[in-house]
Structure formats: structure tokens, C-alpha cells
Length: 391
Image (cartoon, rainbow, N blue to C red):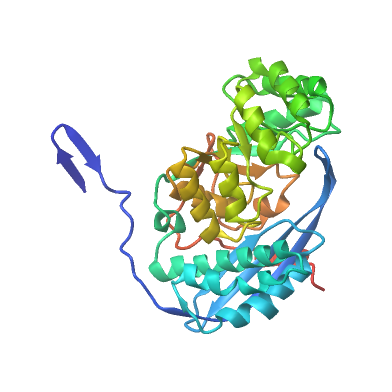
């Protein structure tokens, strides 16, 4: 139906479907870890990855609706996170009613109060369960979560995380060309593991291969000192970089990020290494960042990410999301300050490119959201059985 207001025609074919609230009750959970060896070692500034991992979490409700998510890339802690979900979190919410996600999130928090354990593992366990609970809630409402969370846009510009070390210039150029062929609009390029001069040269190779219309960000993964970060920024002024992510060492990052932001023309991005709302709040309030890339899978799930997005919006800070496109797409499309969706090259993330039966896009630089309820994930059961890592 088309409505007319003066000279303006408004097409409302994209109106959300009618909400059909259904009361659900948490009954049990199933958690399956996956681990896939990669074709080569991917080297960042101070780390390397030789496998891609995730945890599939299913929440089975008394009414038969199943909430599904997959979260994280934790090769050394997957089994412990799975145990926390099943043994510690489920008893706290079993029999509880959905949708009531904020209340269930608070109910799952007490296991993190133990000062003698790694709290981050509990927060990641909450994140996995919170994501699956939200999927069930969206299904109960008959709506995709991007609409439940605000419906700010139905498509997102998509970038790839790439430019890893141990590649020749020709290989880096070929990688950028791969992204263009895959319909990806840009690349978040890895730096911080070489000198600022060498890193600026490597990014120049990417820019030359991809062209001026290609979006380029850089990510040092906390690899530089402040003088090194400033040196890199000076050397790359001509490269039209969208943002400079985690440019400085973790030990004093909030203060150093603010110093760098005051002296550097490139927008500063950080937040993925924080796993609490308070930690990200302090980055924002202190004026340390232009873009916040808080990770829902590392930081407590969509419930917490949305709270952080609201804080960021109040301070004029944009929201990104550290990888995890299967969840990030819904979050970033929901909020008005969302930016780019991140994925990896198929060689770096065979899970995203192969686990989802119904994965959409990217195409022409964008990832199209669907109106499938919840997170809208349909998983390939044969793929799961081949790569499950709990046997």
C-alpha cells in the first residue's frame, strides 16, 4: 500500500509483520563446539590463528520453539564455556518465561561473582546463551531481531577482515581483488606487527589493488606504542582510511587512545577487548574513541551490546562489531549508529561461509537482512557433524 503526504509518496511494503507474542519457557540447552583447521596460519600483530572455532548453542523451550546461535572463536576454552552454560547457567533460568531477556540476563550473572575464576569465561557463556534466548524470543514474536531491536536499516555495508602478515605484495593484491569479486565493500587491514613504515607500505599495496572506492580500515590489535601509531598515521594520510582500530598497547590504552585521538586525523576505534559494559562506557565517556566495536559474543550477548550502543549514541559514537556477522548483522541493522558488518575471507572463516544453509549476501558491497524470525539461522547439520569437537 502506498500512502501520500503532500508531494511525498511513502511505500510501506517494508512494514514489519504483525507481532505474535507467544509465551515460552526454558527447558534445556544443547551446546556443540566446532573446530576447523585452516589452510594456513593467519598472522596478526602479536598473535596467530591456525583454526576457526565456534560454539553452537540451542535453547529448547517447553513449547517446542528452539532458539539457536553460534558464538565465539575460543580454541582453548570452548569445553569450559560449554560446561558453564550447561552446569551453571541453565539451572538459573530453567522454567523461566520468554520473552524476558533482560531479566534472564541478570539471573545468569551470579557465577561471575567468584573472584578466583576467570570471569571472562562466564561472560562468554552468558553471551552464547543470551544470543540463543534472543533467537527464541524473536521466533515467539514472529519478527527478525533487527526489527525487534529498532529496524534502522534492512541492509548493511560489509567489509572483510584481512591483510594478514606472511603474504607477498602480489598475494595481498589478489586478496583485495577476491573481496571485490565476493561483493565486499572494503577491508579492515592488519597492521601493528611490523614497522609503521612497512605497514603503511603494505596498506598502500591494498589501496592500489582495490581502488579508491574500496573502504579501508586498519587494525593494529594493540600492537603499537603511541609514537609508532602516530608515525603510521602520518605515513598513511593519503590512503583515506575509515578508522584506526586498537592502535596502542593494552597496558594504558584508555589514556593513550585519547591522546592519539587528539593528535590523529583518522577516527579511532576500540572496544572489542573490553568484556564489560562499564569498561566500554569508560572508553566512550573519556573521549578515547570515535567508533566502538564491542563484541556481543565476548561481552555478554546482545542484551549488553544494545546497552553499550545506547551509551555510544548518547555521546555521538558510532557502533561497529568485532566480526561474528551472524549476530552482528541483526544488531548493527537495529541501531541508528551502526556502521559496517565484518566477515572474513572464506579461507579464514569456513564456518560463516559453510555452516549457514540460508546465508545471504554479500552482494554489491551490502549484506541484506531477511525477515526470518529471530536470528534467522538455518544450520547445516552435516557440516556440524563433520567438525564437532566434543568427541
